[in-house]
Length: 122
Image (cartoon, rainbow, N blue to C red; front, side):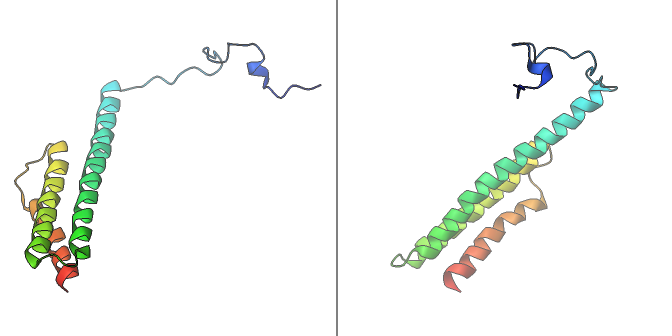
């Protein structure tokens, strides 16, 4: 009866060892490789942080839209808080990339407030 296990795995416990027919690739410039890895890590970290905070912003806008019997000041307050958290999301992304936090990009925090007010009262 033919075995379904590949030939290299016939010997138990030896599949994790170094294969001399396929040596590891040697990195020519380890510093460049580390810089590339750090850049990718920054982008992944900033993307995760910003999208997580933006989920909170969308939740606040949806809460403001869904309030029925609440006064208008509560709806406006939720939209303003959403805008503040939008600015925090932008600032977080800038800080992770090592850029100046106080920049014109912070004006993007106004966008959730504007959209939320249009959706709430429009």
